[in-house]
Length: 336
Picture 1: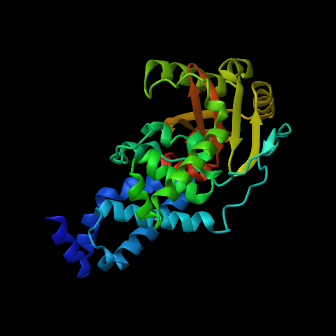
Picture 2: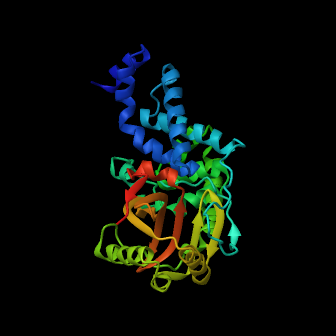
Picture 3: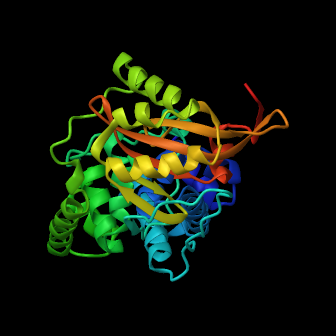
């Protein structure tokens, strides 16, 4: 059925027609909201608000732009509303029993950061890119990129994502944001400069190995063996000198090989031993972490995501165990 016919049916209250219109765009809109908000849960809320707004305002769709662009307009404004809202998830206190962590390098600001399940990226999340796109898909959903976006002003984030990630033309972005081309270009210039300031560590590092390649498998395998055997020395050999460790929603951040090694040693010296179950998040290797216990059950305690560079680990991010179901990972496992 033609789009025009579906629109007329949807305007008449046909929910099935509306779903047929919007279904092809849902995953890419969710990824768009995730980039802007940095939270998987907030992105899903913004997506649902987008669909509700689209359903209620379909009579106002005039067809001057494509339906996809119209949906991006609504989604972007819903995300801007969310970014400007005062309430974001608060920081969480240290809650690992029996472990006294070293003094952190600093306390992080982006405690609401959440991972994006790799299965959803593989399941049709790739939006068609416009001619202005400057980022590869994998880079534009990486944890480092999404984190850096959260440190920029909301409108700059919207402009940069629409222009440099999705490749909309300046005139299209101006229409989406109810702005002018000059204003969009100015915001883009500031956003690019801000992004360079927030990602200085990326400069000069080798590219990560390709997903699923023998090179990635090799470093991931070494990490699993080191972590499961609590071998701090073997783990340290895998880390870059400037390795960065964070653990949202706890604000603790550790910078540098020695400090990250001290943190891991504190974890393992407390007698904590883990089983790791592989997954992927944000296009990066990830693992469900399961704490072995004397009762024969390993309990899911979090999700680790690795940022690789060449044959080393440049960042390690630990998320709470509440994210495990998003990755199809169980809460418990029998001890290995």
